[in-house]
Image 1 (cartoon, one colour):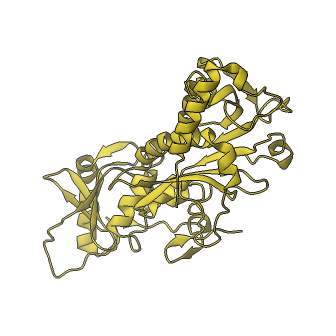
Image 2 (cartoon, rainbow, N blue to C red):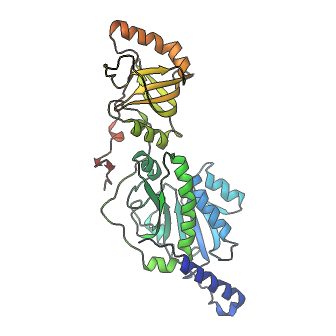
Image 3 (cartoon, rainbow, N blue to C red):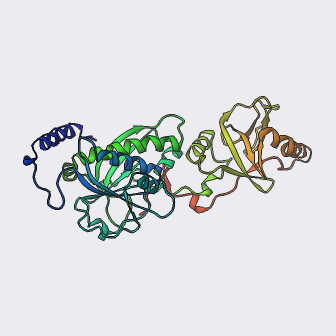
Length: 372
């Protein structure tokens, strides 16, 4: 059972207001405290992390008094977390941070990408919390949102864990909340929703951190899956093996980062502006088209490609330059299809590029296994 602690949080807010009205009733702060407000050091880099940092920043002046002080550790370069911190006058530390001893109660890691050593973790009396965009132990690793879309999960969520040294995403769970994956959503759309949900769940966790630490639960060993980093090798379409739905999920998972790829006449071609499954009326219904076969749909200006169980469409391709489906057909495809019809050659087909071993992680029942 997952809880949000809102009832306990409401009681805590009442207590904090009473303490502000009667300061003599509040115990003195010596070193770290067992309750809010917290002194926090935030580790993050990308836009997903900015959502949590933004909410923590606004919490410094909120009536709940969740955050007393907030400083940031980020990577070199012009990353979104660094930009936000500078715009909001937050102290910024380079990685790895120095001068941490005794200055913070807890750390927060959101989409940081660097493994924190045990000696650093031990400098925080309440440990370091991590906002992870999946229902751990499912999709441990650097790309949980991409794999959620890629594998067609209907439910995901966010998990707040306490970081442990040596391995990513294996710490005990402090808080967890489900999220229904909208039909046909992209990885970018899901990331935006989970970033917001994760930020609010983080604040909820800090409201009753001591109680949540006391009742933390270890992740179960069954159901653990690994979400490896997305690489260009995953963008190659294998027409003989992938269904219309699988190609659709692949496009929604990685399409905003990199185009899908195939080969044509020995050259790499990038497939742009995916439009989903197409319904093709063949001139010869008795002939079963082989995967990779092409059909130009003049009415919709779409290039249709035959895959394992049907046809999928694209509005444009990138060869030497970006070409609309009509430009590609008129300039290249029409002639190749005529040669194929005359000489019975493989010209005019998209040919699958066999992917390297890194694009084929271990699987069990369609799931990527956690490799330990």
